Length: 115
Length: 112
Image (cartoon, rainbow over all chains, first blue to last red; front, side, top):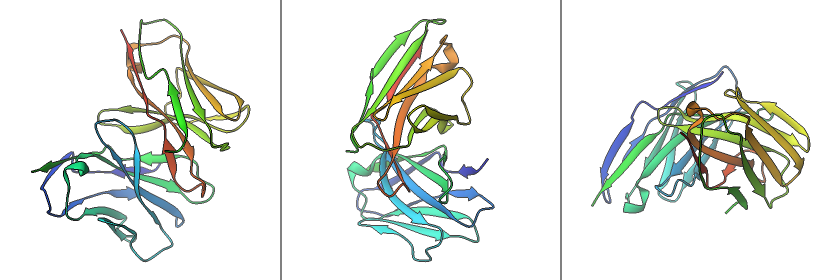
């Protein structure tokens, strides 16, 4: 089974500052996808960003960007200009390429945004 | 909003009773999934379906069964609930590109 590791159970950031959440994964595959999901107190799982392993360019979605290091099997999420609404649990997830249906999730990082 | 609903949203039941959770989608997607979320474990796959009457096990399938008689509905059944099945259960479907997954609002199940 694939493993996804989030080594930071909790993180905090001052409003308007930048924070980076870490994720590492273990795989022998060359074709796969990586994701960050956000889970606010409402419990809804929200897709934040997606990265295809075959793409060298790091994905960006507005204030959210990733640092994808394929050789190191590292996939960190950077949140710029943090806002109070960014406070949530963040989950890193892995999915094998075209033939894979199962997602593997990390244990999550709880992000607190300090006003 | 990916058009996924789950019912019930909250349920409290006693050990040994059967429980069925329902997931309904309006997107006509082929693949549907059931996960459970527990502190310290993230989300773990219970079962998934790749079409009507086509299902397969995930990594934590013991004690659970599923059925899919219509494209839009995927049912998760706990034949005899145990306290270890107290959890939050999420249903998910694949996105249009089939790369990402979209989740329902979750069902909090408490087994006393």
